[in-house]
Image (cartoon, rainbow, N blue to C red; front, side, top):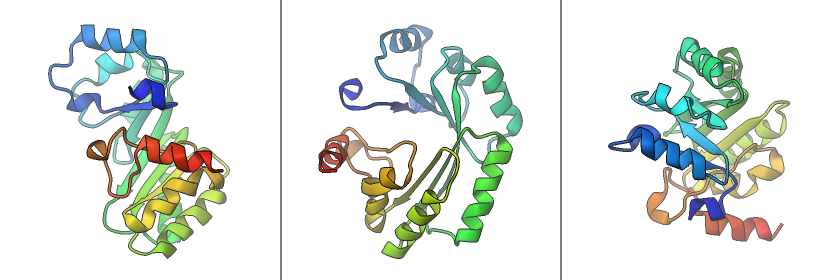
Length: 187
């Protein structure tokens, strides 16, 4: 169902129990849209990157050695380096430091997700996003962060994130793909 609704599918392979080579092979052979591998604990890292997902998302705390290993094995995969703050939206100067660290790690795409405690947090994130000269994703979680999820594409977000169903949401304030599609169709 996801392949019919999304332009890219994010898969948390490290959370799939009993992930077999047969299942991985089938998924990558039958995929119709690009796959984004969200690296978490790495228990299946080498098995998964052998299939050359179009995107690999590493946390900012991941080692540069690991990121370079992914580049060597799957050179066409775009590397996303991401950072999440589930409590607040840091000051702009601190967000700029995070972006610099992401570029130093070798990010093709920088992703910052923060928690918006007030609407001004979201406005600040969108403003900072609009000033970026490289591929960037900047979104806010929480009710006050929804504006970044509905208008972020207008400010330059490289990708927009949505869940298939409300139950599948991975962050507070995340919209479903149907909700996001309806909103984007209005633009």
